[in-house]
Amino acid sequence: MTQQEQWPRDVWPDNRGAQGGAPSPDAGAQPSPAAGAYVAPGWQPAAGPGPDAGAAGFPPPAYGQPAYAAAYAAPAKPRSRAWIVALVAVVLLFAAIFAGMASCTSLMSSSLGSAGLASSGPTAASGPTVGIINIDGTIDYDGTTASPEGLKAQLDRAEADPDIRAVVLRVNSGGGTATAGEEMSIYVREFSKPVVVSSASMNASAAYEISSQADYIFTAKTTAIGAIGTAMQITDVSGLLDKLGITVDNVTSSDSKDSSYGTRALTEEERAYYQAMVDQINATFIGAVAEGRDLPVEEVRSLATGMTFTGMDAVDNGLADEIGTLEDACDKAAALGGIGAGYRTMYLQPEVSDLSALLGLMGMETKAADDGLMAKEQDRDVRFEN
Image 1 (cartoon, helix red, strand yellow):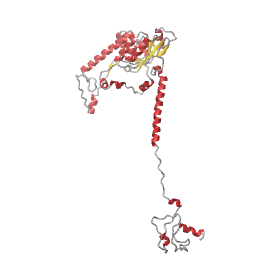
Image 2 (cartoon, one colour):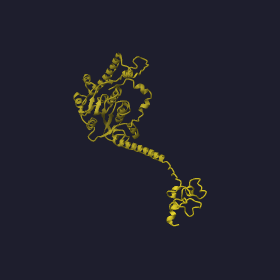
Image 3 (cartoon, helix red, strand yellow):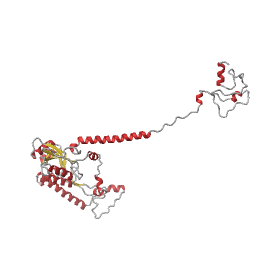
Image 4 (cartoon, helix red, strand yellow):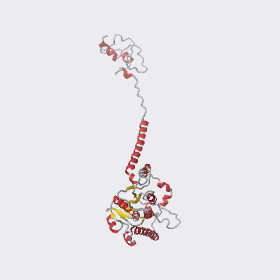
């Protein structure tokens, strides 16, 4: 059989020839599947030769390469590496946090060191020195130099150091708690060395009460200074509670104990009582300014409008002495302290660690936690502000 006659038998192994379906010479032989052909399960050869022996006795033709007859094996599922990715992400996150804390600490040490937030810097003066104390922010009881305890600690430090001949108070505050301002003004008045005030953008209310006890007050032309007055604030939310259908029952030992809680309106008697307290506290404020500035009480009372003046008006009305900068205030303090032109300056601030300063800037101080549950009740007590 020639090669041309053989290829149909390989493709159609059904006992038929290549020409017109005629049987091949060996048609009577028992058929067998071609090599590589698909064989159906349970297939058996036909019983004998016949007209349809080829069609009935052999499996369907195989279209394609024999390799496709092999069973398809699915590739093995790769093992998950998601936990590796998560681990790397966590490590990178912590590395970024620590790097950020380190950079912030370094930044504070360099840029805020002069303000006393970092522990670096001299602990004692060397040679004739003018000490500078920042009073920045709300006057309150928070341990900073804007509080009685913080200011007194630095004044005591300056008092004990013979090289510190005078002190400059760099004031940038809109006031705060009346009692704290009163205490701080007493500490400044009782300080034995010269004190000069350098007013920044604001020197008002309780901050001005403190400043008024200094020997000399510098102010910028645009400083908001003065604001001699006392305020007490009570917010009445009873109307809103009624609209919301909320009822608050205050069980008190006396009728006026809940007068400042804000859950009801003040009675006329309570309003008059609180007004008398405000007037009394304001009178002490006016008296302190009059004594510190060596002005008649009536003159100070006429200036006690509760509003600030510009630095230019404050110089005109006697609440400040001169328009000038921090450097001018240091020169004046040096002159009052008997120091020549070669004096040094040193910031006097509480020495804290870099980490404490960082936590403070991040708002993570735990001062409120020390007050415990009593803080909720204390917040409702009357608070007078200068």
